[in-house]
Structures are given as C-alpha cells and as structure tokens.
Image (tube, rainbow, N blue to C red; front, side):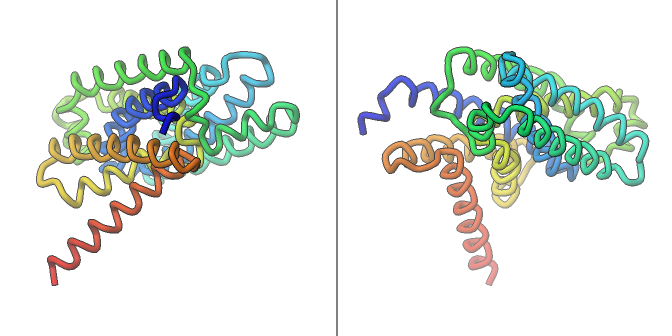
Length: 267
C-alpha cells in the first residue's frame, strides 16, 4: 500500500486524471462523427515523433506532439480531396505513421527500449515536465470545447446543416482534429499508443448506453473514464500490473456488464 503514497504514483494519478478528462471529451465528438479510428492513426504518428525525439535528443513527448499536429493537418487535407471516401485519409496517414515508426526504430536501436515503453504506456515515469504539458493541453481542450460546444454538437450530428447555417465548418473540423492530436500525443505515455484509442472511445460507448441526452453523455463519459483511471492505477499499483492495460480492461469489463444488464432488462 505504500506505493499509493509515493511521489511517482501521485504524479501518475495526476496525469491519468487529466487525460481522463480530455480523452472522453474529444472521444464523444469523434464517435458521433464515426472517426473513432483516428485515435489509432494519430497514436502511430506520435510514436514516430517520439522515436525522432530520442534519436535527436529532443523532448520525446514534444516531438510526438509536433508530428501528431502535422498529421492532423494532413488528414484534413486528404479528407477534402476524398470527400466521398473520407476514411481513406485515416488509412493513408496510419500507414505512413507505422512506416515512419518502423524506420526510426531501425535507425535508433539503442533507444528501442525507451520508445517501446510508449507502445504500452509508462505512466509511472511521468515527470514534472510531462505533467505540465498534459496540464496545458487539458486547459486548452476544455477551454476550446467550452467556447465551441454548440458548434461541435451541430457539426457532429449534421455537418451539412452546420455548413448551411453559416458555421465555419473547415475551421471547426481542423480544430477538432488538432485537439485530438494534442490529447493523443500526451496520452500515449500514460496508456500507450496501442491502447490510447480505448480511452477515447470506450467511456463514450458506455455513456451512450446510459445517457438520455448529449450533455449527460459527455459528463458521464468523463466520470466513467476518471473512475477507471483511479481504480486501474490503484489495482495496478497494489498487484504490480500494467497500469494502462488495467485501466482499459476495467473499461471493457464495465461495458460488458452494462450491455449484459440492459439485455436482461429488455427480456
């Protein structure tokens, strides 16, 4: 139990709680727009940036963030080029991200152990700089969503109607993608690039089963994510388990229980 009061665990808890706010907040809009896979795409690109950071001596999380934001611009450009097949933009950028990450892995053999930690998450290694970056991103995401909540809501349900009503659809689309890139690039050190999309989507999937309104769904998805983060970190800390995997498995278990419960009530 002493681990729960150690400095590294407290930093992990603080970082996890911050990501527990931003990931489901962005996840709600991504799920409703059927862009759930963008999380995996930007995570792979971020991993390539992290590898470059280790190779060049640049702050890895900062390099990953730059790569993710650049990828978000590329996704939006490709979405415009393939309006009828918008999902192609995600597939193309994901392929590029995987290819770059693989290339940089081979170039920096001495750093592979450090880069691989970003695959599965290394929340216990968060330092003050990491927490500062995550905190800034959290403030930015929450502030932008608070200002453009109604616009994002309309854009998520009916993009054509949003355009007809005079909303700057291109700017809003870009804003959502950039915010998603910021969230993912800061989350991969916490849950890992292989699991980061789960934190974007599973709390939202659970909230959509329980909530009766959009606002309730947003609030509930954040609450669910926070509960999973705290419980997952405590369980992982006590029993020496992988924290990122524990958090995600708790979310999946909760989703299965709610689905089973709703099926029972409907019989």
